[in-house]
Image (cartoon, rainbow, N blue to C red):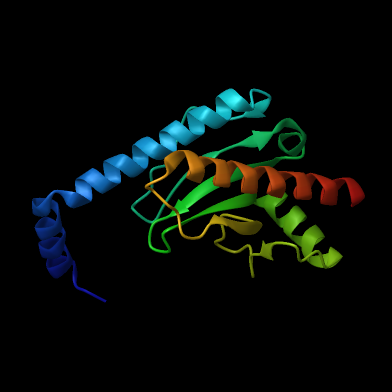
Length: 164
């Protein structure tokens, strides 16, 4: 692991190039635009105004249908910076809800999506990659891909919950 002073030196060098700021600003603008498009296209979903910008580890926003929200669940569309991909996560509104649904899914044997190995320290219950190699040269196509994957994920989760 790089020591903090050396990491800051490298960080400064990257900032001086200017590309890092352009890429980060573009990514944040894209995620904000994606959130706004989804909110417009799905007015019945809970889409809070805020985006979690993170520490360049992850950036996400909530996009939750009413039926899941009523159960204390939420859906997040997440960009993982290091993995450089978009995922959709099912999470609980609090740790108690998270544990309840993690245990339900684990006990059921439902394996359509990746169940996190442990809820200790986890932000999600289940996760799915919706854009593993995002094409930032086609933002409309990327948005359609993320929306389609998210809607399929939500539909599958809702179906599972009605059966259990």
